[in-house]
Figure 1 (cartoon, one colour):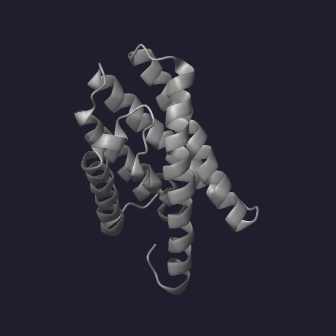
Figure 2: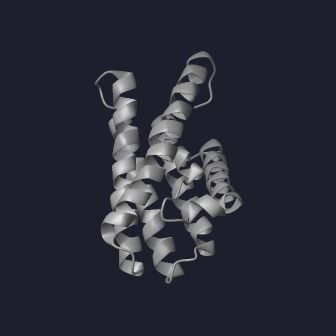
Length: 167
């Protein structure tokens, strides 16, 4: 893995954008049905690779400093770990050799499932809300942010990168 100045800059942009989106939209980012618009950046690992993976991981850690959960440290650690795992999964699945559009969609879907179950599970552990409620809430938000918005972003950026050199 070559991590040059362009990759470092992209990582910083993704981290800052993720944190700003979560904090600016805190009202919908920290609820049971948490539509983290910033999670739409997770599938961008399909287009940008490691800079996006590391950016959403760092951005998640920074954003979760403002978490209203009973254990901010747990939310920082496990939330950023969930972003890392989901981003890597989206990247690897999205780059698979099956039909490009299908693999990108499946990558977004995998990220949605991973975020839903990892985040939903540890939030249930931190709170007195039942597990299935967290899974449902985080799942609905993740479908909106990752599967719908994230997939749309990937498709738009794939079209742009076909005509320019964004990556």
